[in-house]
Length: 219
Image (cartoon, rainbow, N blue to C red; front, side, top):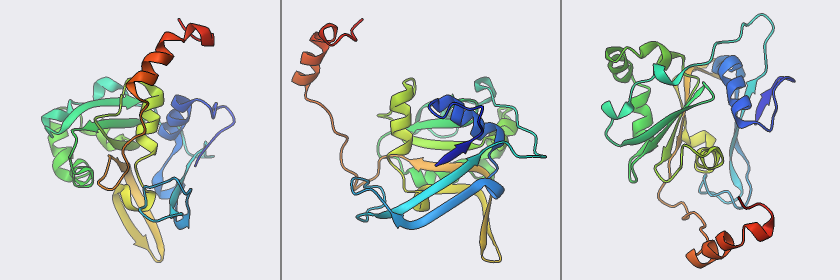
């Protein structure tokens, strides 16, 4: 769940992610709901009907100025740090999506991307500051098309369990309350035990492609 202010179109993915970039601070605006009801078709927790959810509060806060959004050119090519990276995209100035080669351990790589060694490497590329300011880092598998917004959203949000696959750069307990700081990292890569994506047969695809004009939505 992401909450945004009244000036944001909740149906616009880029608008919602831009709001996260401007207003979300994990130490104040992140809530995790572990051990809660899950849709029967959701396989990410590996437990039937039981998993976790997260809430991000990306509404404007009184007395807290909005942050400027980031720019793509401020980020280095991460293949220079990790050869398993196949592509990357900064989405809506707030979320760096990184595609990884099949078979890569996303959890281990997420830890590397949130380490001091990674920030030190970024410093040699002149990019430490934008990476320290980055609100979200999401790792996906390389079957996700980063240039297609619909496919990108599918890839980011169908392959992770919030309680198991999230990691902040810094997390600690303050009394009984968990507090997080820094980039929200998500391992949304395909994991062993997940079912293969449903795909239409080649015959069905060819049939539909021939009939787009009949459906009134062909070019």
